[in-house]
Length: 307
Length: 229
Image: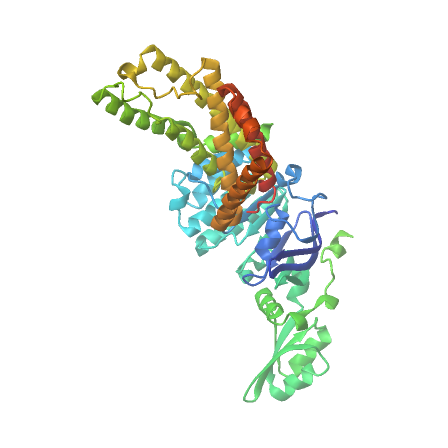
């Protein structure tokens, strides 16, 4: 399999602010990857560079094997929906009509269906839309475009839970019907976790985690119980975090636990709970140095399956 | 080619600003001037000139600025390259200038035939620059309209990319360039030569302005290629 997106040594410098610092990763064609990180971590800048909207200061970006900047052969096969997309002074239906001219795979039927799903009024001026409705418009364009690469930057800012569920359902249905490469930046990590096959976590412009979602799910485990038992169990293991209240303690153990470890925990009357993706990301972003779970995670999470 | 055409269609998806407003502005300016001339007859002391036509030309500067504005980020979001966006928009500007120039030429012919709209008004005839045969009127007004549209586009790009301070800097640079040019002419004692040059006919001036359009087009293209959204 070839990489749909390949980023090598990418940096982006704004005056005194290094938005991206030596970022490298590949995204295989036909996968859904989460781009996670805190506000200002560099997610939007990265996506803008992938979409040819921003220029890198250093490094190389290849989309379908070619640099995206000013390259319409690449850009037409890519759709980018950003949270703060600016639209001209026109109505929802104008935006859809214009988009239909530029995307070779545009599906008018899909656009109509999505408009209905999101209850988006086609005749309303875009500047009169609420924040959630603007987000919905971006989603309609991104899904109706049926582009080979779909980049979402916080696509559902302001959307209510029902509309977000519509988004997940439609995205998965479309993806199953017409596989494509999706890169999704989001803050609602646990909500989107079920969709994600790969995860890239950025913090302060650097990639701190890149792994398959499956590998991450077993990566760290919270161990809790009596202090002595916890200390006994965690001795000799990598620990991210340890808390103690009276005689009870809990610690986050890094690295996959084998069956013997589970059995031992049971005999010590310890509770084991795998960290959710969101907890992992929070941890990785809070302690970028200690996080570095790279050695335990394949550099390219898809290598095993694609080999 | 197809992309250029689609960029032009994108601007016209709401045709109001580009196709209707310039003529509404022209009609308003004309109506005000005609009212005045209808009430106060032209005398020996008062010529029939109005200057009201300027409104139409200024509006081309406005639509040039607006052709970038918030249209650029959505255009780039649709997978259009900056080069194509610029080319398509500039071609639209050229087409609008051709049509606008043709309209002004027709109106000028009517003005001549009706003895200044029945009140001796010289609205579409402007001494020296727009006072020749119909083809020259068309050519000159086309070039000037295209010039203003292109100039507006460049301002739009600078404003989008570098904001108000960028525009101030841009104006400052132009002022500096103008001062340098004036000083160079003065130092070279070239005023008489320049005088002969600008002593040209309206057609000659049109040629100079056409050269300026090409310069502005190149400058705008160089600027938009650095623009980010």
